[in-house]
Amino acid sequence: MLTTPNRKWREARMVVKGLQSSRHPVLAQIVPIRRCNLACAYCNEFDNHSSPVPLDTMLERIGHLARLGTTTIELSGGEPLLHPDLDTIIRRIRRDEALAGLITNGYLLSQRRIERLNDAGLDHLQISIDNVLPDETSKKSLKVLDQKLTMLARHATFSVNVNSVLGGTLHDPEDALTVARRAIELGLTATVGLLHNGHGALVPLSPGQLRAYEEIARMTAPFYSVQNQNDFQRNLAHGRRNVWSCGAGGRYLYVCEDGLVHWCSQQRGHPGIPLADYTTADVEREAGTVKSCAPLCTVSCVHRVALLDRLRVRPLETLDEMLPPNARAPFSVRTLRWMFLTSRHRDRFRSLAARLLGVGGR
Ligand code: SF4
Ligand code: SF4
Image (cartoon, rainbow, N blue to C red; front, side):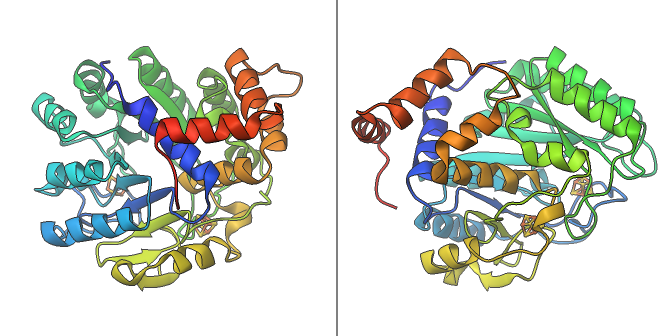
């Protein structure tokens, strides 16, 4: 796969800015269209009739997210590739230096469509594959999407993550393993997500699903991978509750097609404030609001944001917790740990890094 040279640099900026301050959203997911071309049986995030959000409205919403200091903006749905002006929206996200992401079922991808996403400046794409063969629960199957993954591996300049889902009555757990193996074979990254119910809470894993989960985590778990760092998901897979503070509504925003801010796709209505009226004070208040749904929450993108905040507040302990027992951190991690956390010159290293990356203020 080709790479965009400055993406790593901008990702580093996002992380450093998130570590420096808690006053901005790290990640916002925004819905440009609620309609979907599929109808997965477990999904509560789509309809079959909505019109696209008008382009001007989308551009204004992206502008407001940028004014709040949002560092990553992901387009979700429904199926965002059904929006006729998606490339213009991606360009607008990139204009304010946010990272641009897309969550898609992949059905509408073609070589030409991938090249247009390259040209628009997309940074990363996530595609979820639920099974090897399509069934009545989901048509997001490897049989249909394998050619799209091959096209992505050949032509995308953005990073591509393939997410397979485990849980509930969803297909044979071996399917998730087959999907993850194929993604890695093609040079893409792979993660495994846990199925949630209509409130974002865990549907317990069967022993077979748990075995598949562990094997995928092993296949995809170098130190830097989200899968390895994400002990939230590991705990849930083993039926353990998480003790954490969910920053939804502050560090993570979900903006629906009506332009309202919600904690997440599974907790719509809280706080339900129009994005146009959302302020930094709202960000700070909602980030600190206790969510009773947190212990069994499976919404992994919000877990990732919480991990960044945990690193900001308790850096040494968090780094140690991220390592498997008795493992030694890679040399690069030990160097960064010394430079920014334990060295007596750490304040100088931190301000130098912030200056180099052009990070300051909020
Ligand atoms: S493709 Fe995605 S948005 Fe569409 S129905 Fe399936 S899970 Fe829902
Ligand atoms: S804990 Fe946070 S992310 Fe999870 S369901 Fe509740 S509000 Fe959503």
